[in-house]
Length: 540
Image 1: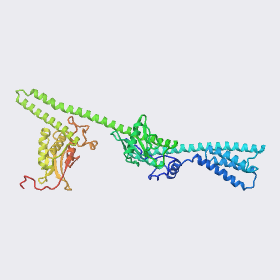
Image 2 (image 1 turned 45 degrees about the vertical axis):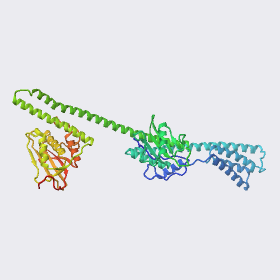
Image 3 (image 1 turned 135 degrees about the vertical axis):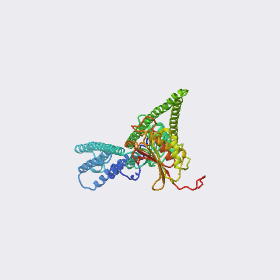
């Protein structure tokens, strides 16, 4: 999985001290819009005391200025009414209520004659003061309520926009790592903090994703383990281990914890507002979806691999069973009839036993060789070899498989020695010769050639036939295990060419397939060529 996922989930928050510089890189939102959005999220809300102080200062300033203005006290009643309405656009409802009360008191005390005393108002002034106080209270409260609703709608819009930008970034990422980096970028741009994504490492622990910017020490890893085990947020601003430097949010899907988001909060942050925590949880939920999607994709791939592996195992078992039964049946039948006194018949049965034994031996050798290649246990013993000797030994090894086929050996007399493993090269050439015999009609000529390549760096040995050639659809899978053509004759497991490929690579060489000089197919093996010094036992 997971990595997820996003790694740099930065901290939200209207209370954060100073935001870190915005991370560089492309993002779905324009830079100006994202910057304004982050300033809104990081803006510190004004305190109740500061708003009340602002109200008192404004009312007092108007009273001081109005003292020197020679107008009717009725004029200042309207001024204070407008002032309270204007203050409702800046402060909360309780400071607005305070502004309405102290402005009414100040109007009476400072402006209604006699000044600097609380006058007993006549009916008209009492009605005016009551109407003013009522209008100020109702207007201020309604304005403050509308303002609070507008702020809440703007916060919801900003939260929806932030999550939409994150969803777009994750949907457009081609890989899980790219999606994790995109999520980190979105979080850093919005919140301005260092974060990382912690995912299960397969050994029971948690490993940070490489794209994360928050580096965890041992104590922080212990806090992360507590958050994972409890399934609840831990670390800074939480009830669990609040002294930690980071905040750890579980990535939950259903009842499972898929990983953690680790967010490194600024040192000055001791608590989060409800909307900050809501945005953090929203980002964590989006990243949890990303991690879950990656886990489902990985699980699907594992299921496919298991299905393919199971199919291969069944194919191998069926093929091996069939291939073993055929020579064993021949051996059993021939042995049961060997006690005959008919000499020609006994010679024929002995030849069948010999052929079946050779076929069985070749089959077992191929299986063992494939096992050695798969286990990486093949250690070639390189020595100087003569190409003519290698070809002769391989022809003897295939026995009667080439009977009735003209075999032409074209090896120059001055061909240099090659450094190879003689046993492996014998099996390589034997498999190529058997391949030519099995996939061509009887009496088809077979040609064995050797030469030094034009650039002088390799020695090439080729086995060519004049059969039907290689089907185009087989070009990409010729040297794969259990690969056999649609028109291949019964017999064989499709391991011969894959073993040839493995043996040549083990010796530092390679193998290629293509059309032969006279049509048909040609398989060429290449061995590194280097000048040799005196060969032990060489009289020359």
